Length: 219
Image (cartoon, rainbow, N blue to C red; front, side, top):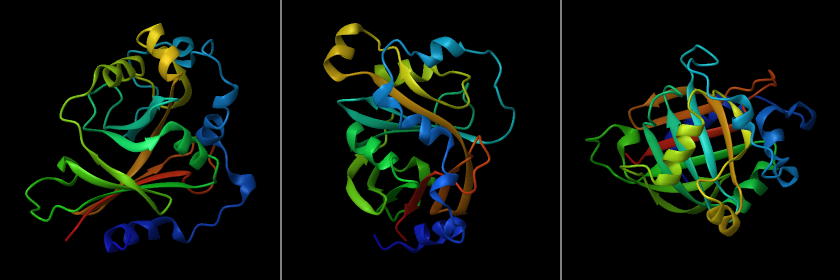
């Protein structure tokens, strides 16, 4: 992928060096998924607070999906509000979990639309890259599916976390596996009207973001 908008956003972290020992936080929690069982319902334990756990202007991002299905991405300006961007990525959960085993995960979404009549995150068709490899195309949802609504309702007010969520019904869980998620706060950096990025804010203060999501539109 040769896109100057994404490359300029990557420079935001290109100068930062990370040792393997500095990795931590939510990605290490996510690596424990093979050890988790359906009895570990983190959201049920945390409850659903009426007020945000952390009061700031950080963007909330959630990546979730069934173990035997694809993962979805939801972006919210406030964990209590409906997502402003929801998309099912062309990545199976097993592939995404393998990528999470690396120290840095970078997901890039590139729109080839050149009309510029919409805001960047209002574009519909996206080419998706994960750690530099193209994994396919996807379309932004106009409306959330029942499963996506289920996840957003369970995580309402939860600022960050990772684990297994209760499935809408037991039959779906047995067929598609457990419903896993990772939810974090992100620093939103707008490069231009055609490029922006989300850098995960590490809860443990580790140097540099562990998960970055980039959006760019062809010029």
